[in-house]
Length: 135
Image 1 (tube, rainbow, N blue to C red):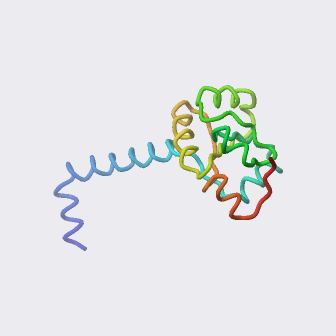
Image 2 (image 1 turned 90 degrees about the vertical axis):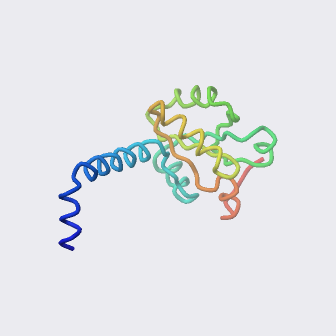
Image 3 (image 1 turned 30 degrees about the vertical axis):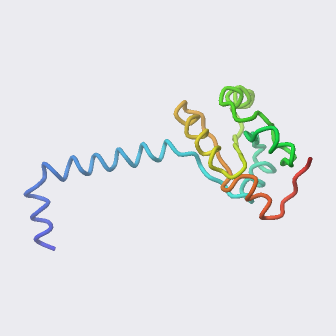
């Protein structure tokens, strides 16, 4: 242990920039990612926090079944922003078929300081927990 401390002291000009770089990286990564909710948390947000659920699946996937409170906007980010602007004071949850596309869209929205959530696993996760969908 004393050798390690001595190494840090002797190489402070390397250690300090490394620590600063790591902290900046972690901070940027933390602000870039959207918060991920599981299906049960989505239900909580919809029922208790009056969240807005935005479905970004294509029309074919959407017609196969949707969550009752979902607003369909499709995979267009501009339409998604327009829908979000209607209710900025409420929590926003974005869902897609498997959770991947909603994560990418949420990351783009986070860059514009829009706070959004995504559902882990998307509609596939919802179905796997035998939660209801409507046609």
